[in-house]
Every structure is written in C-alpha cells, then in structure tokens.
Length: 42
Ligand SMILES: [Zn+2]
Image (tube, rainbow, N blue to C red; front, side, top):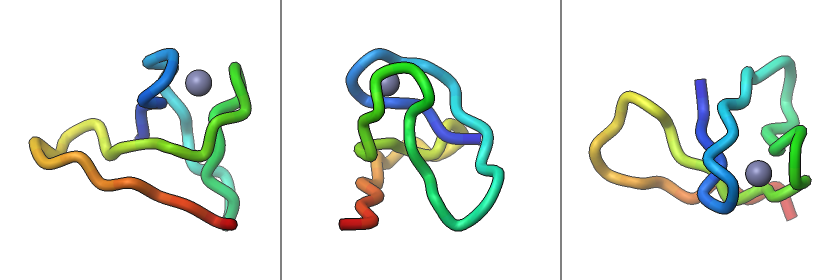
C-alpha cells in the first residue's frame, strides 16, 4: 500500500505502475514506512 504525497490518497499497487489514481501523481510513499521514499517511473 502506498500513499500519495500530494493528496494522501491510498493506492493499491496493481502492477508495475505505481501511480495515484486520484491526481495522477507518481510521487508516493509506502504507508507503513516512517521514512518517505519517492517512487518515480519516469
Ligand atoms: Zn494523489
């Protein structure tokens, strides 16, 4: 489970692409990690 850094939407990872389904942002962090990790597929 990831959380969007922009809109805080929770995102389930359904495949290789990790992307916010709400705002389209690819800047996410793992929900259960205390240290934010940016994920970019660009
Ligand atoms: Zn978002």
